[in-house]
Length: 298
Ligand SMILES: [Zn+2]
Image (cartoon, rainbow, N blue to C red; front, side, top):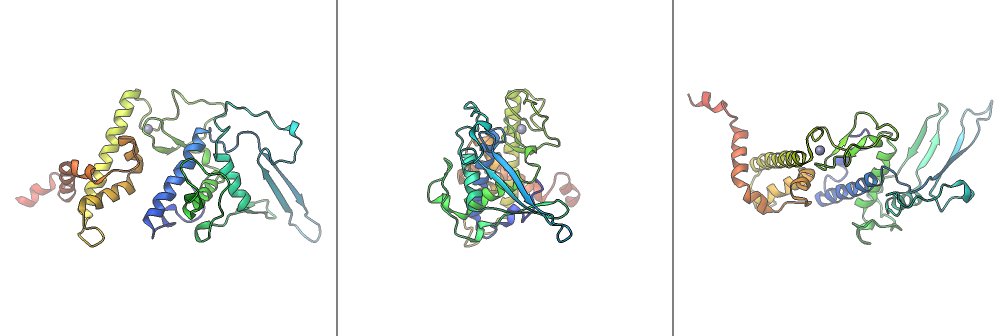
């Protein structure tokens, strides 16, 4: 997990299962577009500058700064100082930078510098407010869902990760679609080998083997999770159907794996039924690990 200050992601919507799922979907949508754009949120150079007043000796050591971050087009700098727009850039024409700046425009962070030179950005969480209707809506949202707190919160967390200073370490494997964090940032101008970034598991395998390995691993993990949840299931009014209960838990815990194996976002209860033999077998093995039962029997 990237070291982003604030509450852990899992605790944001612990009471509302559906909302947590939406939040994750939206956050994933933002990051996928950001990765597609080459980890940029701007199609061209933004206008970013700061002006400060102070300190005023001997009265004050504080300096009051105003920081301007203005997207291209809204800037007040002379136009000739801006680079020409590169239309082949994947960030050109993306909804992402509009979403980003629209959010900051409506919910300006409080920025201040202290006397040691530290800079603070303070963002207010929109989780308990009625979010403002955004100007730009990404393709996976409609006007109604764009007004949801889950979306506003996802944009906020996206911005927090970008400001964490570690965002450039995040990548997504082109083979297994998993997100992973690099240990070191890529050097400037360094290009991905082959088609794009590959995670530690997929590196060194040829591309067919990579895809197959990734699928096998993903399926294996799904079966393990299903077996665990199969064992955890207790009949109740909320979870009368064991297949459905297991399905919900797998959907919740194995989002990446589901995408790798099925290219879909969720599994149906029939996936659990189809794999019932393997799941129950694994569930039994969880209770009686191999070898352990032989001593018990003698
Ligand atoms: Zn991979």
